[in-house]
Length: 304
Image (cartoon, rainbow, N blue to C red; front, side):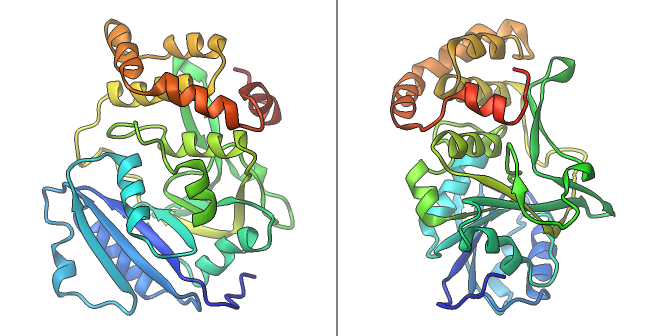
């Protein structure tokens, strides 16, 4: 287990937008969870309109909490903004609607500390159905959709040892500061929401790093029926195409175009992607990556 021998600081980063009571519930759970790890909490209030962070002004926790407000950066860039404020040797990016178990931090970081993995996620269960646990992400291309989904129970080794995953769910994702900085963090051109966790996982693999699941840890996640802020399929499809132009072969880029859900918006989405630095980023990524996308999809047996 992660022994915390040198007492490295861990930064737990929460991007927040209109979380209602969930953020308080999450931090209260963190407060009531046992750990021997020295950690700080970074709360990135990304233009919330419901006052969900107001309680922090008069609320004391046993851990340090840094809160700052951003102007609607979106899920990827809000996480990057939190990382810029963080002081830890390790980063754990968490959704602000989670419940934790004792010693989850130690167990989650253990594969990184011991050189087994570079990025790690726990098992993630529904908060009202703890036995329904997903382990890591796989890419689903069914029903004309491009979507990362949680894998099922059948992927867990009998000895519950850490194992590779195609993607790390952004609901709870641990990575060292060193690796995070080396890969450039979450994509800085992504907007609002969609594919930010899958993209950083893909980038890690292509750059020669590894992503694992730690099945010895289970985090309870509140799966909301609706977003507490405006999300459009156009936002997610923009991010999908930016990821495609950054990482994929020309053949896969053409396949991704067919996954754009509002067909009359497709040309404009692609135009907007190319207006930014997607092609420049593609050139930079291709020059430094260790593996190509063919290697990645073959490794995880994804027919794409």
